[in-house]
Length: 109
Image (tube, rainbow, N blue to C red):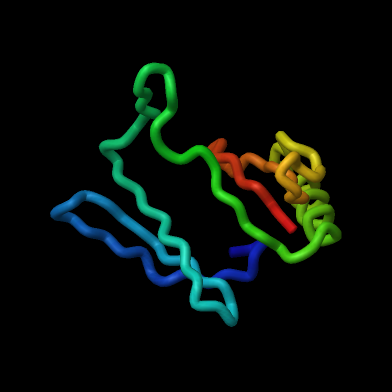
């Protein structure tokens, strides 16, 4: 919410299914992200050595300059930058940062 000017609804709790969630909304857009938590899921599952689950997610900030600015700001606030800003082989300009839980977030132009 701090970095991408998003708003959140109140925490939703579903006692019968034992999960909680929040919907994050971008300003002036119909796009939302739902963040869900289920306390029974505590470790990454693998299938024949391949991780199943979240690999990463990407957020487009609109320009190369903004990717650089976000990367600088996140680094200054103590986040681990695991991929410096660069143009990828498929033509995207991006950096990669770890969130507070170690999830990979691509910041793209």
